[in-house]
Amino acid sequence: MPTEPSTPRPGRPAQPGTPQPGQPARPGPTDRPPHPARRDLLRTGLATGAAAALGLAATTGEASAAPGAAPGAAPTATPDRTLTLTGHLPTGSPDFVHLPVEVPEGVREIAVSYSYDKPPVPAGTPGNSCDIGIFDERGTDLGGPGFRGWSGGFRTEFSLSRSAATPGYLPGPVNPGTWHVVLGPYQVAPQGLDYRVQVTLRFGAPGPQFTPHYPAERARGRGRAWYRGDCHLHTVHSDGRRLPEEVAAGARTAGLDFIVSTDHNTSSSHAVWGPLAGPDLLILPGEEITTRNGHWLALGLEGGQFVDWRYRSRDEEFPRFVRQVHRSGGLVVPAHPYCPYVACQWKFGYDQADAVEVWNGPWTYDDESAVDTWDGRLAVALREGRSWLPALGNSDAHSEPQVIGSPHTVVLAEDLTRDAVLDGLRDGRSWLAESKSVQLEFNVTGHGRRAGIGEELTVPADAPLDVELTVSGVPGGTVRLITDEGQMHQESLPAGGSGTVVWRTTAALAAYVRAEVRHPKPDGTPGRGNAMGPDLPWGPMAALTNPVVLRAQER
Image (cartoon, rainbow, N blue to C red; front, side, top):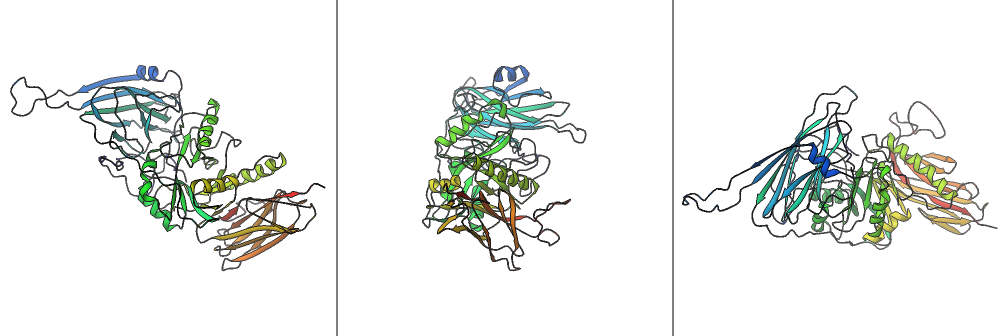
């Protein structure tokens, strides 16, 4: 699940560390919990407005001669130079404030730390929360090449050089020119927000060039088969507390065949996954793009590809970045669309999406809302002759005790490759599982024909169709069979959790049919479909299928 800004995350604290040549840095210290939402773009007057708002104090060390050197001897090295940038942001400040920093020749490393005040606020009033990142001399244009990293509110300091960078940031050349530290004040108290940013420029010869190790696009598959994968995971490269090594190990423990790396607003983790993938685990690069109007997943990006997040729905920039992801063969997936946290609710619409995440982490009421909305859109899409939107389920795991692979998506793919997995997800040949212990088969047969999940069955309108679900791993579970009319059949599983349910319909009666398998309610009862009451009518989800589409033959 996304993390509420005011709720500390469980798990071990991030450990400070110095970037090592040739590998990403270990996490630095953090003085507050990570936040689920990131910020948007003030697209005009950024540098000018930021400079006007600054109180700038520059502290520059003097060069010193070597010990024992004669008076007047030349200094042996250029000392560090530290700039202190301070300012006040009132309520209603722009989504992003760009602080220009002039970087001269000879800088080996840039190190940044920041803080801001947190005055008391009345109950129900948001307090101060401010994110941070950096762009290099190539500029801050939306979607431009200048992006060098973002840590949101997870870190209070970071550094980057040619050889290494703090997780969330990109190693690379430290070229002279105007760089920008970017603040994202996404919550500002009524008193305003006072910030202090220190930028230290360290001089010297650049270290060796960082070598990325992107994951392979193929693993050892089983040919055409069902493959389990979690498409929404975080590491220390954004607001997670797991190292990439721990995420890969957790995926194997969960019985997954593939995962997608989706750290918030950065591509920095892409470069470290190569050695962690293997014949048994396909790892796809991705990103969670966290805008002010909702989060979305870019699945299956090219290694190192960055997708910008600095826009709102009203800016009409979302289609541009959809096209960017599609050009690389990736998928666009709105994430947790009804999450109640600040900036998490989805406001961009679904017309350009390839799928939608309807189940995010442990089952909660916002997942119920997402499934209901998704189900309603199925009927509309089929009526209008448009493609329907497949459903995905992902863990969104950040740290302990959040469980990698709970839930996950089981996709029918031609093989365990990037393209085959993405094709299966795009086509809706998939179902959602709480864990690897849940097994499921779902088919519709009739008139000598058969169709499975994500497929279409075209038959005479009145031909009898048998809908069959076989499931295991859900003790005391309840099977629901749902069409465009709503729930049409409900049946309880045996105590052992395994069983087969068969129900008959026709293409005249149902435009599609899909299945849900629910756990018992907290009171142990199975729940009741087609009923209303003061609480949710069902227990948590154990499995959910994409639909089998039924079409009546034209006479």
